[in-house]
Length: 373
Ligand SMILES: *[C@@H]1O[C@H](CO)[C@@H](O)[C@H](O)[C@H]1NC(C)=O
Ligand SMILES: *[C@@H]1O[C@H](CO)[C@@H](O)[C@H](O)[C@H]1NC(C)=O
Image (cartoon, rainbow, N blue to C red; front, side, top):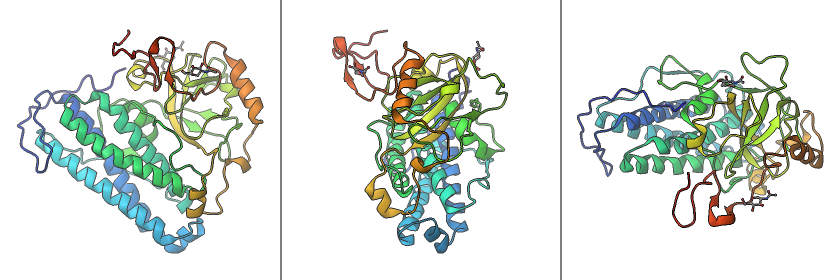
């Protein structure tokens, strides 16, 4: 399903926006819906940090292993200020387009503001989803000026992502050369549980929960639950989406083992066939085999010294209590599960035979500038 196809165009008396960006196009239905969607995510982010900063004391941050309370609170406060500035910008932009930012959403973070570690882990998801949401909405924006304005927000969200990766204590600040993009319905599968009281006009994918105990790492066998999950899980696949790859890694759900080669954020989906999902967010919008997800996990296979300076005493996934197999076992299961799809992550990128570019699913872009169908 293509989100945003049914939004009614608001008649837009266009006013000049203060500052350098002017919204001047009349065909603004998708632009408005994208900005409204973004504004709700910014409300969510701003509210999350405001509540988190207010709730925890210096000693809570110390107990969570941060080597400097000042460093972590300064970063969280800066991030909160950025989200508020983004929200203010989007709100003005929507008014300029003759619309408004939704104001009736409520946000509940009770389940994740239980302690500093859970808050920090959730913040990491929030920023990765923020980046994924702006990236995934880019193709829906029809006005180049609005696209540029959204991109200027995206780059800041990506910096937040890096800070939160670092503050995890076990992450890599910049784990991949490419980020994951998610469609709005995919974003809502992850973020929707925090939001109530407003209808964004975007259908949400079914939320997916990882039920594996402990922190997943390479070799961890992942288990899941979703509403309506049958007891017989044969016929379902887990799909691991990693930035920069052409397709997801597709594995039988009963053998959903994290293979070697992954570091950083992974978006996990459940499908009802073995067909890998396209990384290309435009193509994936038409996927008809997604049953649930995505949910987001971090596979911290390469803890950075920088991360460990900022925060100590955090155990990486290697010491988790979840079911694990060795890395070579994981790779051989990945390799044997379905020979018709790529065996495990192929992290190489570049041009393939014929000169077409094979990264992020751009398999139809040729080096001579033509686009094959
Ligand atoms: C697979 O899941 C999709 C999305 O939920 C659904 O539309 C489709 O009917 C399912 N196919 C089968 C064979 O169950
Ligand atoms: C990985 O991808 C590259 C470029 O897309 C390709 O040339 C290479 O053969 C692939 N390697 C494997 C093991 O599939």
